[in-house]
Image (cartoon, rainbow, N blue to C red; front, top):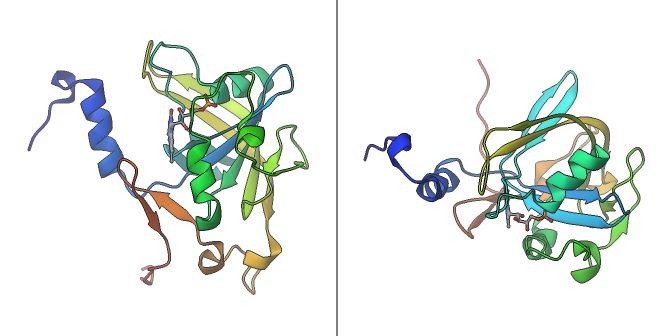
Length: 201
Ligand SMILES: Cc1cc2nc3c(=O)[nH]c(=O)nc-3n(C[C@H](O)[C@H](O)[C@H](O)COP(=O)(O)O)c2cc1C
């Protein structure tokens, strides 16, 4: 099959991309609003960027009506967010937090997600997540206008927290112990337990 993206509607392109770009890591992003209300939502258009400066990006699209999702609005107004890493044991509640709640409701309270204070930024961490990356907004790039339009949030990672029990002997996160999940197409996910080694040339 060949597809010219200029002749294909955005929803179909989206359906293709979420099945082609797999597995995707999940940024479970906590933010805080101008009025101090917390917010939590998952984003799988997410990647690390580099280590100098320590940086990552995630991509909250506009809502169908063209407005910003709560996460994006909070990041833009407060300049801070936390990326919580998603392990198997928190995957189900992570999925619940994708619900579109009224702005004045916090996913932390509604879905009983325990908070833990961050060290450098104001938004809280998810206590049950095995690792958290505290970030400050570096750049926000809007790629389009209206409903579904893509945006890129680039954050500087100002603090890393990794649960001691998932560390290996060298002091790095051990994937075996972390049990991180990945997102596949639609509502399907993958475990990361089945791995193999390739020596780098
Ligand atoms: C695993 C998962 C990954 C998601 N990834 C994205 C994404 O990359 N971009 C996006 O705009 N929405 C994504 N969503 C949908 C948002 O989580 C959803 O729109 C949420 O209501 C946004 O919340 P907010 O308005 O509190 O920011 C994802 C949902 C799930 C379950």
